[in-house]
Image (cartoon, rainbow, N blue to C red; front, side):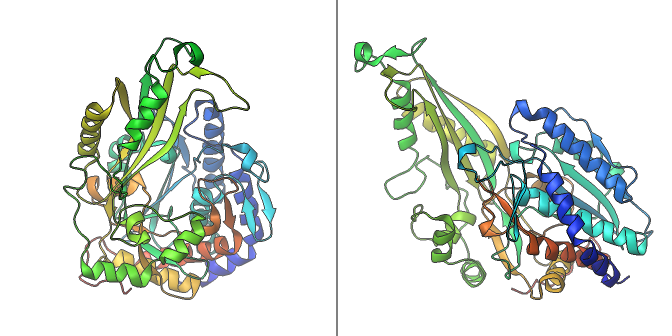
Length: 465
């Protein structure tokens, strides 16, 4: 079954697809904030209705212990493989709102970009697959493979409900293959096929001191200051060279082989490119390129500190409480639970006052088999959609579903990402590049075409770099 008619339909329907994306982005589906629970539900309901509207009649927003998981199926190709299409409709918090040039949930067209929270991560990427399915349904009666859509609403807050859902629905879903679009390319003209993801461990450290804030003139220098104690502990997490100073942190890290370092050097961004896109100075573990540090080496980042007063003017207090958030990124053979225990031991040893530590999220790292024909299919789809074969890259980010699919369900998974470095994912003024969105839809069409030829058993052919 050719994808030419589906591509022609997608091109005719491009402006409406952009309108669908704008509507999708308008939902304030921030999964981490309880006050946004109704917005998350409304977004799930809209997405399920949209899927039913394109011809996936059983699309439903399934309730979970957290936010809904939208699921839809199409099984009318006997003998063809079943492809699970994953995406997430929840988004990151928008704060600080003052840093946005336009309201984050009022999608705004600026040139060839649509600005709004979640536009790139992950609503445009998810909707590219939905538009590809619609293009086949409208022109050929359906895609060339059987399809199961699983779109979750908790990816940005730990995916706590996803594993129970996938395991409970395993017999109903029965996927042979999976595709996840939640990663980035190297540029609008530089498609990239991601083959490895770091895992993560998100922690909160809290220090309690006096029962209430104290006058710093009366008590400063005489009582323990929770904020100072916390800052001292945070400073102990790295040594003077930028390495993580937690004992045992690197014990199970597998060194990069010369062959993979060469592959990364040929396919990944240079130090100058990464610094230019970050707008920051270099830091971190010596002996590695910035690309290696941010994708193939583990890291520990302090992502937030709160305590005391940081508003205008002065407020002379010793704060009663201080809190910090830590984001730990893990590489193969690092187990989140083991790393958690190592950090707990470090906190107990180095904290001058009692501190509590809680786990917010944890996911293992993941790596795809470059010999599997599914990755050949993904590379061929990029070549059709973008006019060139993709670079093979690692990502420093974490997509919890990938390890679940590969390790717990044994489903080969392709990471077919369409985000761009300029999209400002997780930052104010996030946006989706609309020409890339159009090419992403065509790439997803061709991926469905190529996936029809794939069977779950791998053959020993490596994707060309």
